[in-house]
Image (cartoon, rainbow, N blue to C red):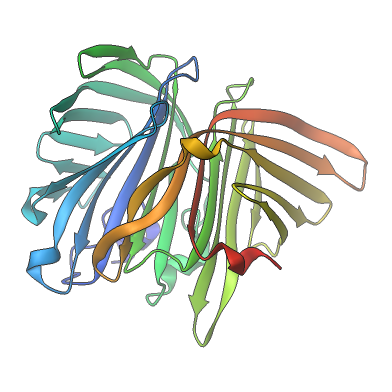
Length: 325
């Protein structure tokens, strides 16, 4: 168990018998910001064997299509030393994504090589992006940014259309536990004019001991300089919601990060998510949004960065009224 805490990318469910889920999220985007897909391999263990299974979810951002491909629990294979998982002929790791999917008379087949992976900086005390919360065994949902930024080489054959992802971007994260949070917001992009910029933001209602709190993990990497705004480092957060978009500000010491999303309602996709051992419609996700960022040093009155991220993943789940204060 300690090995999985120190390396949160690994599979955590080896000794979990029921009411457990784990899923890895791969977002791949071509260099033109035209075709963007999310592939989500995972496993869910229900209260009985009948509801336990593995799966691969497929989201097509351009066409707003979604498919949930169900496999048996035994089809899920993993390596307990390094992050590698297989579901039938499909292989997922930090350096490869090999797909051979058949569903609803559709096919996706091909191999993508993942290069120049940029991790979320961590320490022994604060492993992974979630930090010391990984040491608490009772959390409802854990998260990990496996690759905040990375480059792609390769082609996918999607229904006999050859889509070249060479020169495009990959982002990888994961979640595990027994249920998604009661409320959450997620924003991610690594498709900026400067290819060395990557942004990820997750905000959620976190049950903890006898109450709950708004927890958040925000990381902005600019030319290998990493800025973090998190609950752990005592950053402050303010949220405003406008229909399908949000404005969020994060403050840490002399730094303030302003985040604003821009979406089209018809591009949101309804997806499945885990709830107490079951996969149910729970998630609303958009892969073709934009995020406007401004990072400022307020003491020096200096704008460190201002820009727009394309092919932005934007996700809402649960009761959004929780954030409207």
